[in-house]
View 1 (cartoon, rainbow, N blue to C red):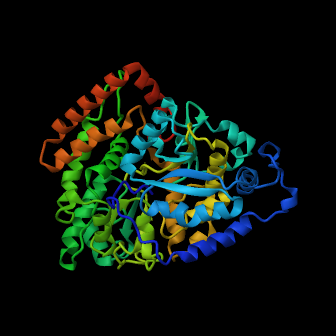
View 2: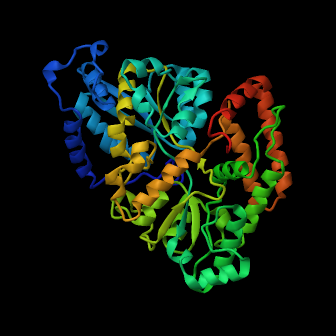
View 3: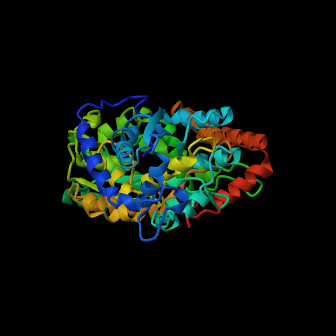
Length: 506
């Protein structure tokens, strides 16, 4: 999951994580078991036949790492960085001799720092974490190394096909060329209280009032009716029908999802912004209606505030990234790095479903790339192939303190993962379903400027401005960015994006 700076630069304590290093060493021995005498001394002679992608990467990297080479990788600051710092980084060094240096950068600064380093051409970065929506920008600028030749040399195409199709087909290529490996299954899910929806008194009262069963809502109209009903019915128990994060940074993703589920298209045939059409106005008016049955102050809720309400049992429904499911289940709640997460009061009571509309946002996420200015491109590539591989990624997505979410077909059916808590199999099934129907974030040249205009518009909604006027201004700002980039140039990028399977609902 992409933290989107929700902890505002918070750095977790790393004490009492020494057990991770022990596990890492054991796993490294497993990953590297082979006859050292059979190793080739040059990367070009590495055999790929009958070997896993992880084994191939380790064998090929060893000769490159004999001098203790250091690979520098850019990673999101906070929980995400505990993976390479405490788990995968030590494993890789033990297996190959290559050290891993992690440069922690807040999400909001990552694009800028990657571009600045590329223009300075210092070679300071070797491997990168890239939000897929940035990929066209970075690839066209020349900041990313094209990976196809490495993929073929090290026999990785087969394992790439086992990445869930929605991520593989939407978050890996630009103009048909590979620039990154999808590495984080960020997708929104609905989390709901199974015990509340199962109550006979509520089922009877709801059907008497609305004429249909009390169900997990499948449309936004149902969400409003059910959420409002539950708030009225449960107010004496201190429970609201729903809660949501509404802070504009998150609202950007929520708008993109719901707008398309309502039938909206971001641009018309003339490449004019269409977010101010009836679909967009319906989304903003829906938010205003829903806030009336949500907790007071919901307009300011971010990731942590909304999480606290839900895990304390004060909301019957919410929508968020995959970590909510793990946190609500109390998965390793005593882990020190997760001490900021409120203690769950609803373990074993949480159900998982797709949000209304059935096409959830693949919100942010990360892909692994190689910097075009790296002086260690081969070694950097081998490291990210190993990280992303079937074998290693299945371990990384189960780390209790990191936020990488399942993104391979095997992740959703991993027996070890399914046994982590009683309902983990249902959680993984919902994530797998979202990976089939999810919607890709809008990806253009200067995507950040389009997103910023939308974020500013959402801020004005909470200030009381008219939804139509807000979206008219957003559309005007979008058109100005399009003109600045060049209408024909941007149209080509948009049409390429819109042709992807995850751009719009089928």
